[in-house]
Picture 1 (tube, rainbow, N blue to C red):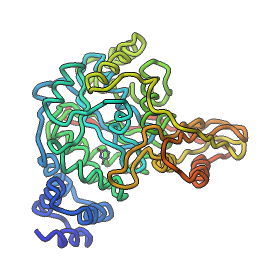
Picture 2 (tube, protein in one colour):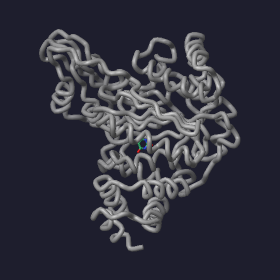
Picture 3 (cartoon, rainbow, N blue to C red):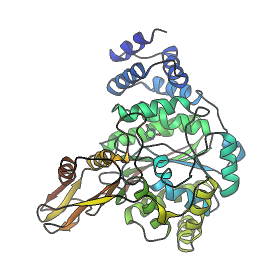
Picture 4 (cartoon, protein in one colour):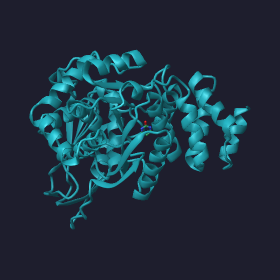
Length: 432
Ligand code: URA
């Protein structure tokens, strides 16, 4: 296959065939195609879209680019969870110990930051010594020890997604339904867990800005999972402002610890509970018992204890008071009195990335101390001068003024309260 012709085909809006897709995915996994050609095709897919057939071919080729762990054969009850990406979203860090503390094993194939969103693997990397499993033996050892395994794409598993994910992160090619479905489902199917909980986000902080796009994405993800025999529940949830009040690696680990200790952010707690309840119901618990079990795991300390166990099982030190701290902080305040009508989640995410909480080029180091704390939430009535958000500045030298402006403008202040929006908007189920 002449790969220049493959790029041209998609550039001109024509459909890729199996050979084209295999050349693309194989070239990404084996390193036989350069970044410029891979990125050109990613951008063409992003702009031109992909058919259901092309999406299926991408999922299968990316799944088969490395090993298949078949963890569902060893742990049929185990559940995996994934979000399509948002800001202030540390749900995975809470979901895993919480669900495992209720007796359901969790095998979580996680991702790093993507575009303006911060990723679970970057957050976990702020814990000294933490290492996600990169091969099957490591995955099994972690589950045996604590009932949870965080895994990462590696040369062994989902190597094509590893490469394409890193490229999409820095080439503005994340918001493509086909690429998102292929990225998420290829690595989930490679791990081989038979139960999957999806959090499909819509709104300013998500990759789907419109609710209808998120609903279509949820349907596409559930359909791919169901045809692979995976039981799936996908919740479509609100991401029109940050989910929790912290953005950034160490800050989000702290936010997760607070939820596990029963004193965390209300929205972050509510959504985690909803997703965790889906997992327990999938494992056969009646819905009312699931909610009670989850509350008891938090109130009785079992979920918090499980976090320590899982960090130890992944080689980390569960000393959360020693997480990296910002070198300095700067708070932006409301320029006028009013009610917060909207918060631009993507703008906040990009400010956090500029501080070092994400990557601007492939291979950038994420600064674990960099991030934001959000003080004002949609619907809050503020006096002029009330705090909106605090920049947490880590080691990176940043030019502050443009960031402070962007941050202030991310909060729309007005006179009328906005309509309240539900956190969970819709539910799609497959193979249940
Ligand atoms: N999470 C992923 O793993 N991939 C995407 O493309 C988006 C979110």
